[in-house]
Length: 114
Image 1: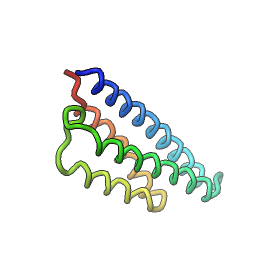
Image 2: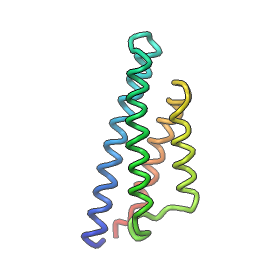
Image 3: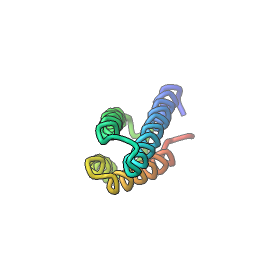
Image 4: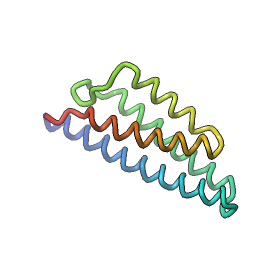
């Protein structure tokens, strides 16, 4: 892999780690909310941060050369579906968070490491 491509992959991996941290935080807040220990506005703010980070990640990813990220044509529609799930109640939120985790892991398998 060329140094420039490796730099882009490193940036993607860093973004994935940041997204996972936000996912973890949203799950913790959803648990607290469901148990009556957190206000809805706290969870709403954290989900908004996750949405913004995921949107920024998707914009970055869409600009990458195919040599860095080998994904199918349905990848962008998968992003849109995941993003839409972040708007529902906590049950849908939990499904969205799990789906987002799976998506990040699957995406990392497509990074060109040759």
